[in-house]
Image (cartoon, rainbow, N blue to C red; front, side, top):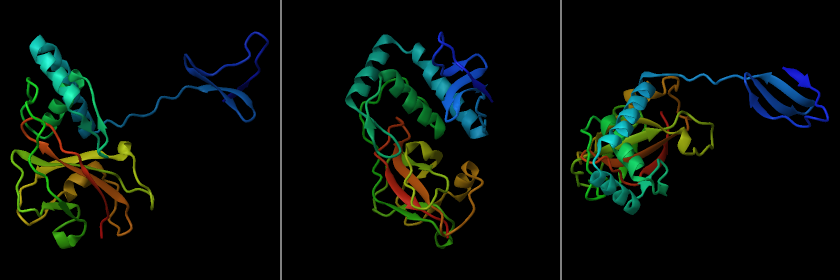
Length: 232
């Protein structure tokens, strides 16, 4: 890292030029080498990129009337992030989003926009985070009503500092699975550990989960239920 003395011609420098970054520090103007962040390319991340590219590229093969159908659908129905915030997006983005989800859960992609925004009933979700439920991070539907053509769609955070409430960027996709009424837990211990292998079991962990119902036909989801969790 080197200090820079500016002249009457150049009185301020900031940002990146070529392989250098100019910034102002407490001791004066500084130039340092530009460093690109390391991108950890895990199998899950590679698959997610592949799913996104495939769904986005397929938009070009749709007919004008199909694209119009997606534009109309997107204008009428919002999408929800892992914290339940609703946002309206473009028809192209909606087509990409729903088909990326369908590929993610192993379902067939769709070309026509859905005719409804309904999803099989999710009901109140019961979560268990201890071995008492047969393993940590288990869920079951305790309503007596099974969701038709739908599954749980689960995101979770790594272990966070005590007292931290995460924003949406902290959540990663864990898995999807049955939301049928059965009265018994479906356990996602292995799925969570595959995404966050460094998280060790501890009763003091601060782990958050976002769980929604996703249609296996359209990729549409319900607003999610968000809860904090821990291992014990």
